[in-house]
Image (tube, rainbow over all chains, first blue to last red):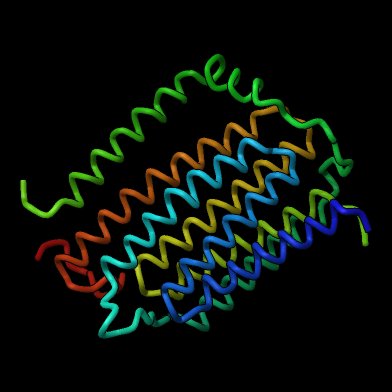
Length: 165
Length: 103
């Protein structure tokens, strides 16, 4: 048992276990903080896939940005004193059957198929390649992403503010 | 213990995707539905990076993952603004109670 597989199983356990808590927990705050662990676990999986830059971006954007926004959302909308941040569920049976079937199908599909190369390639992608792709080959996509982010943030600020325009 | 292959990562991402879908189907709180969407986007990202790593495709998979992360950030900001407005208007964040388009 190599260190690689040991670390993989650790991060896999963290990811799936905390995602399970996110989905199953009755308390909204527990869900949000388990989501933090899930994002950390996914960042660890990226590192194992030798995608260091993606892992760092995952930590900065998800943990530093999206999760904070989600916590703001929970705090601003939940009536903490009256309901105690409990959430209720619906469609329990249908959801379990559908997602169980989907998970089984996906895993069957992925593991019963011998099309993929099964040897581990230990050549990490240098950051230079990613940046070259972004500003040479996919420059239009890069600029579009910038415009999209600007529009999304202006739109969010405009939707979220209190007084009517 | 066997060698860690592509299939291990694919199974992890399948489980993550199904859990996200489960959150979307069974939860009534809009913020938890949003968390389910984030889980599903993360599962897709793991697939992109795993295929890129094991298939030796260079940096294109990483690029797709970065694009997805940017889109997820924009989506979270917009969705939270909408949820806050729904809460202000209907005084609830449950997705099945806010079923009117005007006040």
